[in-house]
Amino acid sequence: MNSRFILLLFVMAGLVVAFAPLPVQPITPQERTFRIDARQYAYSPSEFKVNPGDKVNIQLVSTDVVHGLYVDGYDISIEADPGQTKTLSFVADKPGSFRFRCNVTCGAMHPFMIGKLTVGTNNWLYRSIGLAVLAVIGFLPLSSFIPQTKNMD
Amino acid sequence: MSRFELTRIPFIKNTLKSRYPQLAVFIVMLVGYIFAILAGLIGTPVGSHNFSIVFVWIAWWAILILVAVPFFGRGWCAVCPIPLPGEWLQRGAVLSPPDKKPKWLNLRWPKFLRNIWMQNISFLLLALFSSVLLTTPNITGIVLAAMLFAAIGLSTIFERRAFCRYLCPVGGFIGLYSQTAPIELRIKDKQICVTCEGKPCYNGSANGYGCPWDVFPGGLTKNTYCGLCMECIRTCPHDNIAINLRPFSADLAKPSTRMDEAFKAFIMLGSAMIYAGVLLGPWGAFKDAAYNVGTSAWFIYAVIFLAIIFVILPGFFTLGILKTKGSLPLKQRFASLATALIPLGLMFWVAFSLSFVLTNASYIIAAFSDPLGLGWNLFGTANAVWQPMLTFVLAPAQTLALVGGLIWSARTAQKAANEIRTSSISVIAFSFILTLVMLWLLL
Image 1 (tube, rainbow over the protein chains, first blue to last red):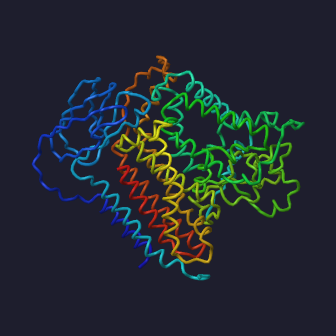
Image 2 (spheres, rainbow over the protein chains, first blue to last red):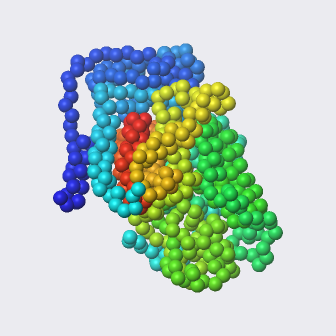
Image 3 (cartoon, rainbow over the protein chains, first blue to last red):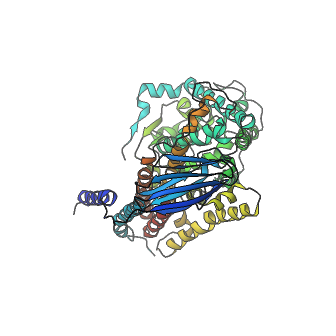
């Protein structure tokens, strides 16, 4: 087969891995409430998962200075003063993995005060892994032909 | 391999030959650099509102790692202000060479240090303290000032740009990754250099200085140690120096056999992965350990950091290539095959920086109007609200960078393995596993 055709095949396979719609398991949405403690420079818990369509209530409790919580992708946020609890409610209607981060300058490491919300399955990670596998599949068979020619032990 | 000589275009050639355009950029950069030092020392201690943090670690870093290094190689070194005051002092002149040579020690750099191990160490020193350095304005100010004074000090003791060539923590990795850039400075005709009398490109002449980077342009085969200062274009009496556009990673076709360069690749690769986990991950304990310098947690962090870079990554890499057959000794195979980690590391840094930069770029707008955090509002943007930018393109862009880096690394591994007649499979597998880890850390 000609190499351009093989390359075209891999590109098409890559597009399928990256963009093909995946089957979605129907799950009845629930209301979920999480209490998240915020301190310099961490959230606890720092990772949580919900299902697509869930109504999520985040109770942010600041234990030292003023902290915020901004959810990437959803563009929503809250702020909590020390000792105070603030609640952020939203419907998790966008699937994927999203960082949430402090949006109130709270000290030196503020830009790195980060947590992770996963809505459903982190499909983009699996698609990316699929693309990486595809990339290697494209190279490993080829590389086994290239070496072992001359001057071998 | 196809190349296009940019210096054929009269405008480009004249701009590069004249000292004034470069001087103008130098002066702007030097003013910005000194302002960053002052802002760090006298401005607000809140990093996200201080020019030194926002413009150095967000704006400059974004330009450096996302644009300058991938596309212009050592283009940053061509306009970097750090060596300037020392170089002016060393030369006793700002523009053209003076009639009399100034009397400084002008020593040769010690032979046993003519490698990039010192740059590896200086980068690691900054890397271990990076959580503090990246977030604390006065520490950034002190480090920037220390680099400026180190460059001045070395210029009075050693000849040429000893700081840039052997000590600069940034220059080391720019040099490594500049091999992937689609731009190069090379001679046009080797024979002309062989017969050229006096070698003014290296020794200097009335038209310009001898190579500040201690490189003889006639022998240049890769970008690593050419700082694109353009002196050789000015001094060459035969118009034999060209700036070429070329394919990406052309220098990597001939793999390096140097261990200092191989370990630089591991240092950069490991650092990008550690930063992705510690700074951008959701694990607060890691951040605490990295930030609280001097505590036992920090010492454990430092030991793990160094172990990943000097033991774990090179160890697995060596195990992988141990079984592969080849005519070269293991050490040389290790150094040559580590070439494949150069594009991988660069793309790891691109993926890491995209996240960091897009999230924090909006601080630039506010810091522009209030660079010292003193309540100024010079351009009416001081109260701009922090807002992550382009978060919807972040994950696809990071995937593109990481998977693209894997493909690039695999291709480089094939070429390197072919060059030394061994197999590239273990190197490709190594790059693949690291890419999976990086995808997991960032996505």
